[in-house]
Length: 262
Ligand code: MG
Image (cartoon, rainbow, N blue to C red; front, side, top):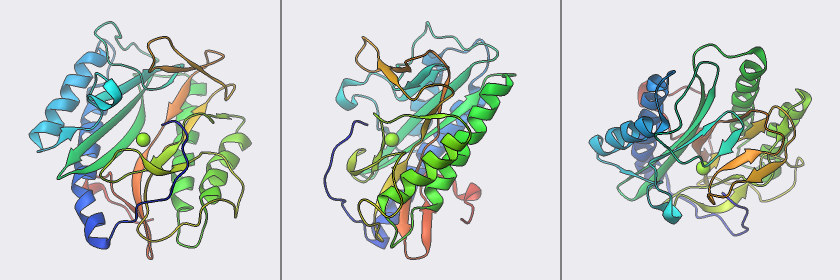
């Protein structure tokens, strides 16, 4: 989302528990789309699949109609960073990377998550981009601890990405999640340690590094949604919604059988 500045809406332990269902449905839809993403498949077909999974689990696609967005997923291929509109004309091919972002609303709570998938065999640069961007997400999640600050999350992401020679997108950032998909605060993927808002128990945030193989600079496309890298090099995007608790970060957008301790 675009940058804003406000205060977080804290969630009680019971509310965090309730958010796990929206998280589960979001994660299930994402994984099903990932399994179906193969050469010859269009992003439009993947969009239909995501909507079917979300609705069959009792949810509503969070993205559909959000700000007028037409899809249930954002599907962004190669140099596309985020917010790609699913389309019959976008057919995946061997060697592509595909960022899929899915969100579900269940019982009024939102789950928001993303993953970048390899389509068939991909080259070494893309493989490394995916590995490092996923690692950046985990580093950011691991820094989301009570008593820390927002800048600790951004620092964790940025320092890892830049140590690998990759570009960190500045214009689009993570965000609070709750009854709205985009709540305060912004969660930048760059920053300095011990700066920014203090992290406290009950904050629920989406941590979503967008990392480019080349320059961090972006280019907004004429459809008003799609964002691409300025230099045309590939970009990756991984996202999870987490709750900050006294016991550490808790993953919300995860299927229970895949839940892992941090
Ligand atoms: Mg998000």
